[in-house]
Image (cartoon, rainbow, N blue to C red; front, side, top):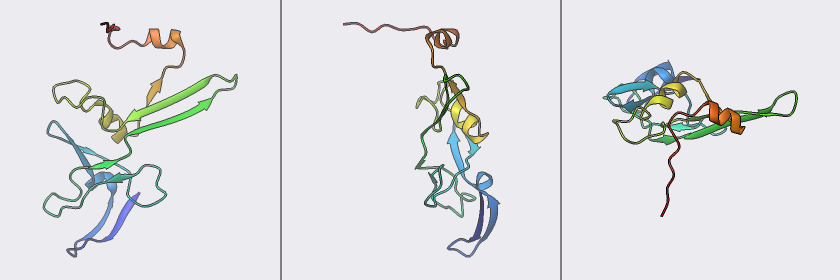
Length: 130
């Protein structure tokens, strides 16, 4: 999507949204695609800031996006993305990981069978009791 037109202060804009619309993660400025017009699948809202160079921080919009289909033999196939990433802890390796994937229009495969889940464990299971 290309943003064209004039901003309230008279500045002319003609740029891809990812060039001026950003998300901040640990000092990184991550390009964010999407827009705020009705009917857009990928809804994103970022306030305009002339001093911030455009739309310097996304405030809300798509957060969990999933696509799902069935293959030729009826097995489910799905991909998803957590646009704001998995963790709110800036020290976590999952603080900005999926935001970068989202920026690159990449997806995370969803594992649908026990064997698929077992083959793709990222951290060991943790049992809560009590």
